Length: 170
Image 1 (tube, helix red, strand yellow):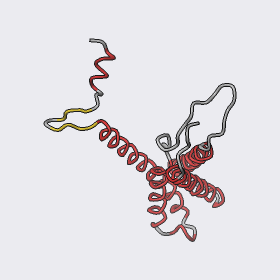
Image 2 (image 1 turned 135 degrees about the vertical axis):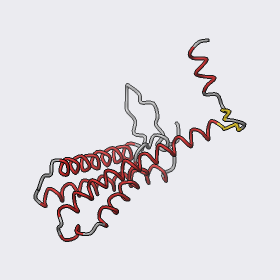
Image 3 (image 1 turned 90 degrees about the horizontal axis):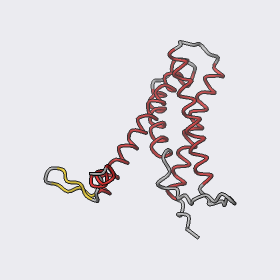
Image 4 (image 1 turned 30 degrees about the vertical axis):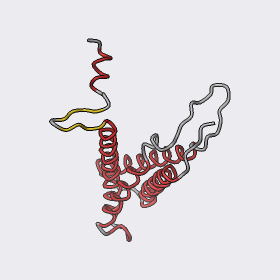
């Protein structure tokens, strides 16, 4: 038996689990939901690090433990909504001769910039905590700003991708 036929039979339109038949679309939707939950967990863990860095500074607004919870919830929301837009943003094959504007580029750029900003903030926060660095409040504010702006860009991109009319094929 060829490998390709074995793979195609393994991924047939329906799968049998025990006495139940599960439609392939249900499996894909379930897998996508698990992926989104995993992304939300990554966003929440990044928010945990950023919130812990802010809490460690003990400066005014950040003296409460609520900052950690808020950063975690906002991170989970932003990563759940704003990453993996490929299913929502229709992509046309790019022509090698001329590139045409199809309207999805701003959403993809916002999502990419937001992911980058949030990831940089989380990475800096981890390094601050692990290396036990004492940095000026301005640099800690920069980390917090990267987190807020990056997460906000992700939420905006995800919202735009889900509520815009689909791009029509011409």
